Length: 109
Image 1 (cartoon, helix red, strand yellow):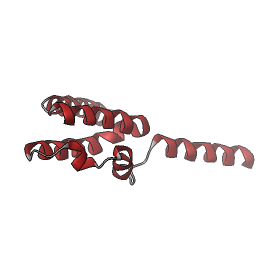
Image 2 (image 1 turned 30 degrees about the vertical axis):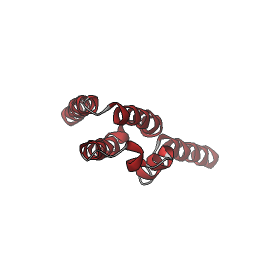
Image 3 (image 1 turned 45 degrees about the horizontal axis):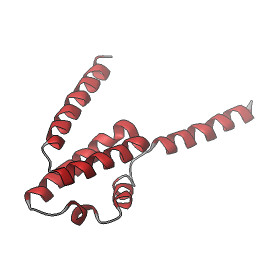
């Protein structure tokens, strides 16, 4: 139980630190970061933190090098996000597995 609580508190602290960093981004980067955050969060929940941490670092570096945000992500930002999430388990996959497992279990009875 203690590990679970520490994980939640640690995740919350890390999230707050990331959000503070995101607020320091230029308007262009902050707008795209927030849109990406919503897109990724919808499909993966807490699994998104590591991905968003990487995006944030990438955006900070891009901003420091005076690059436009779409030079980093490309014009198809959804495709950029999908590529980042390619190896991550999403809620949809979890629900699909649960559905199939539930059906299998009920048909075996």
